[in-house]
Length: 191
Image (cartoon, rainbow, N blue to C red; front, top):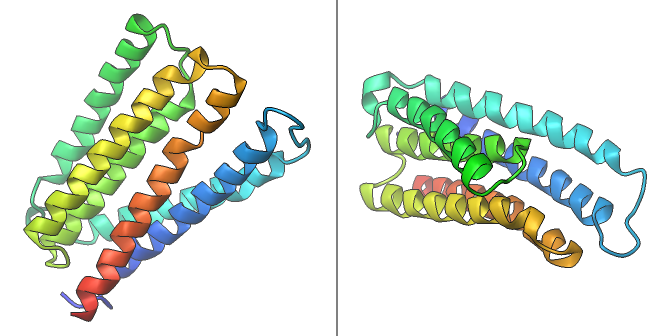
């Protein structure tokens, strides 16, 4: 399927907006949570982070839903319901077993994983990604999600400096994986 197809364009633009969202959020984190000399008055960085994040989700979901449901490798409902069940299980495990305070980051980690897997699934379904490339990115999303969950659980048990760097890891990994998917989309289209 040609790259100019609306599905691929929407997913690509969604990824670009998500990368920008991560960069704004990461910049806010770096400045606001700096262990020494934290910068005040940078909360405004969360506004463009939120807006680009919403735009990213809308574009990616529109791209994913623009393809007939039967064309993907895994049915869309399986990924969505799997994400919901996975979130609830992880919420219980992290809160009850690890005594981790419940914050929005867990929702963002699971939501990002479902979105990224849905994109990969759709790109395979429209012929943009090969089975091999789909498998590679699925493993990368799984690894990034696992590492992000470990960071999520550990955060409140770390000191200021370690927690500062721990909080950056999920943002960096999400942005890098989305950049990788985007580059693979462009490269696979040019071949």
